[in-house]
Image (tube, rainbow over the protein chains, first blue to last red):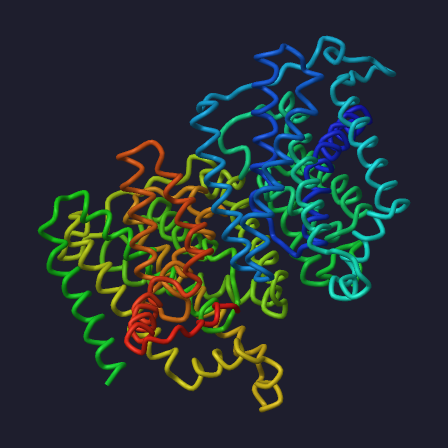
Length: 286
Length: 329
């Protein structure tokens, strides 16, 4: 338990948090705008990984796989929102069950198309290996994950804070009825957000594929962790998603290293406490 | 008259299950036993969802508490393998209720989507402990139970065990039916329909919901005890999110607020998960499809089908096309 241990664990936690940010920022936005508990979000993550694998197998290009996978899954999300979720109107229970139904359908489809083996996405050589700083071995891929999440986070922040669509989204999160009243097409905003959420989750799936692997069951394994991030950070808040990802990434790493027997408990118990004390999360707005 | 007819139909259906099942092949007996256990879980959830209007995404937690208690007592202390099985049932109900009493403190005051999220988180807490607390729960491998209890009658025999589970199911159905028809049950419906009004009328609505939450937890614990011995293995698989979600589907599929509907839904979901999955590799399409179609086209569940058919018939006979209001809640 020397300084090296703490530094390495902190680095691992932060890089895991970076991956969680990609997954959870979309979930948070979807919840904030649409008030939907999207249990198919893990499926978007998994599908992203699988589509990327297909692209890599056919073209051999990892770089091409990232946008293709993210856009494909975004289209899937867009269709799901337009055809199935939109007509339901606002009914939390039915929306949840509908997204579960889709999660099962996606699971089966993935099994039929890509089989049941554990697969791995191999990143290009330039991202392999590690660099050594002060005796610490830092894998380049994890640094890449942090950079990627930082870039995406910055792009999202600029979109949300500086553009017209961002202002529309924020207005819808704060008060959908009022937003409609001033002429914002909240239905279009919802569609955009759901597709964007799917896009980000799939992006996370491609990036995480080299790190977690791509296998049946990954969808439901990663989903509750994404919810922990969203709940701790606050729903519909980008800053919240970023802080929540870091907290959960670090808590998960240190929890597993320090108290393995209760490590998941240390992840979900704070989630319960925060929900009970401040249902809107640390950064959520009333 | 109407409610009497319904009662007769339920009794006839129960008798049919009781008489036909023992003569079916051994696999069907196991399947029906599992369905009855999940029916108890689904009915416990129906108290929350159908009557109090609280959609819990963590009902598997109470099943897990009951099941792990049974397994740990049986393997560590050889307790509950003879007549003490009765005590284990009581303890299972108590631990389910106690867990719900603790969880309810966090969950019950939340409403709508937040209730969904907080019960999800609570369910994940239990899963996390089951999955990681190796020294107590056996971690991922779970706990394999020794033989079933034996006290004059041999529960190891699947038919005998079916009778026992059937007995518990009927008792649970009867108790819950009495409960929902009691003034307390009516107050839950009132809270579901209009909580502020109930509060103005002087009801302590939080307390009523909290009690309903505890009662549901108790019946969940009972289902857990029965499940542990039915399956012979208790593992984190039993407390995963999917189990809680399936319990919700059972209720919604059958018809929330009907109790019996949950049992019907449990039968269908268990059949799909356990039987169809042995027949065809693509059974998950059917399960997912049932979810999507139920939500889109059958908001009142299967129990609302007779009423809908009567509605259509009435329209035909009158020859007028009345546009029925879409179910929205």
